[in-house]
Length: 334
Image (cartoon, rainbow, N blue to C red; front, side, top):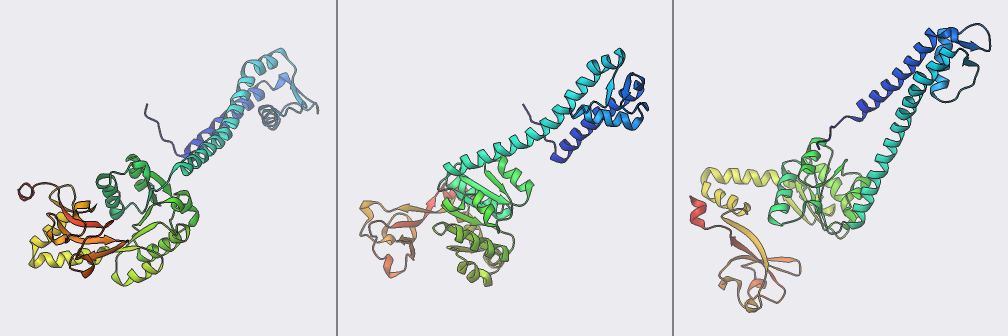
């Protein structure tokens, strides 16, 4: 069944209005039947006395200085005032229990998730860059949505991420406690897709302090800030604005080159850049003689381009960066 969403402020205000309505109803009942009540001062029951009696009666304090003495007043207490007292207590206790229960449930969910999660990916920022990174993780890398954690301050962005089954954390990633909730200590990779370069530097620095072994990939807008992000602990830095600007400049004179680059960066169809382990039959041979178009060799965590001397012969344990054919080229052209 669909669950109605009500803001906490509105829910609290509604319960306060119910409690005040019960109090006011009891005041009116007592005041209109004030002749049926006795006061220890023997000066009658005023409107203030009615408020006083309703307050101590609904809160079950009951000092006894004002009490019903006639049969009518006692019948009204049994039939009307007692249900109002029960309603008041239900609203008061129910609000407290709901707050405590929700906090306990949330704390248990966080503890249970943090005990189980390992080798996940934390994506900081769910803007255009963050969403594209998540799409690549889910589609190309075949990651499960519950293995991706999104950290952002925009609740609408988090709601969009949660709708896709992602784990979301609301807060600024420059704070260490927010990153701890996201479990960066046990994360395999951390993607920093902040909108500002200074924020990317601070987030990278905080993430590296909490996760010294995680692979951190950060995005910056200006190339002059690359060294700052790397000094903060980023393993890889992607310059977004200059890369886009370079493609725009190339498109003015070589639009087909830009189309090919976009094809390589779009793994759903056409051609794509992929990575694979070398086969035993390929060891000792040259990557230039393979059927695949090899761009480079990854050896001991280092990348060697295919024209580098270290890439003349394939060694055991190497990985190849190559052009993968996703769909026939003719179909892509059509």
